[in-house]
Length: 235
Image (cartoon, rainbow, N blue to C red; front, side, top):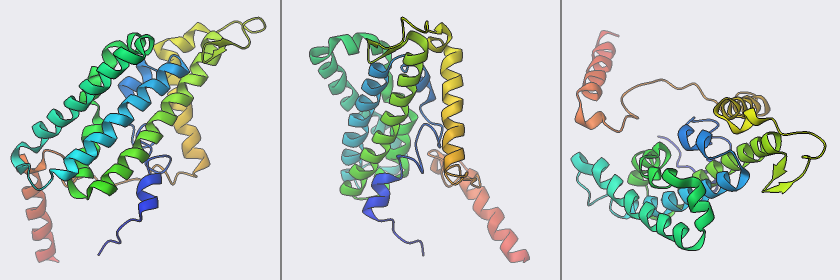
């Protein structure tokens, strides 16, 4: 029987051990697209974190009510509702950030981090644990985007949070503001996490149908179990 994780481990695992961007490699589209500056990266991270926490809590509360066959559409409806709230708040109170992030705010609806945590954690745990998971994963996502934004802004424009730092000494390298620079910084950060954790963060896992959100709707999970049962009978 698996030991139930502690509250602290649920909260902290998303920061390094299971960082959604640098370890699980999820949400790479907004990561690469919105980290041309530190402000944009942190703004995107905080927006996604707010949606993640709220949707995790609501989905956990409704986990015994939502029918299994339509759970994915129901999750998307819940997530879309909170994304709309965040979008309107940004438009009203931080219009400059809203204009910078643009289309990537409504695209939080299809962010695989949020839907993945709803399916793999919130739907199987109580609301308090779901909230802790959302906070931890959100902090990890925000930190990853913030660090990427800082590095790309510093080397690409010679500024930090819009303030000139080395523009008079070293001219900015424009490639860091483009997609190739984003991929380069992304790869360096993944390598750094792997190096400092001695490879422990990047766990090798067996692939199967158990972790698939669509397993209940196809015959893959049943076939896999039948194969395992047959193998056990042969042994």
